[in-house]
Image (cartoon, rainbow, N blue to C red; front, top):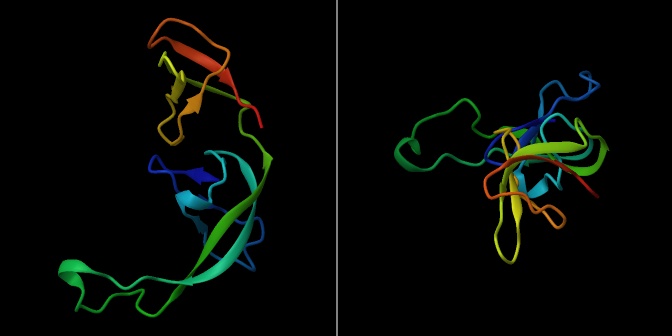
Length: 126
């Protein structure tokens, strides 16, 4: 899985004979997967959406084509069982913002109470 800071990702398939290109995984289908994880993905064919806006009337290379879009079914292997990030001590829900820009989520912290904005290493739980 190659993650993007905006939350979506791409999966490079093990078998390039079946899927010649990477599989796009929208942010809503990431299911907690992060950059570097090895994942099992359910794949569906989706039409490439029509272009809108300023260039809507012009021909484009992907017109009428399809792409593969995936949904993470299971995380097979975590790249790292921990994240490094900056801790924020909110009164109701303390959280950690990862330093790695490709990890788009923030994580709630139920057990830590370090100083505000301190860099911490946090374990990921299921």
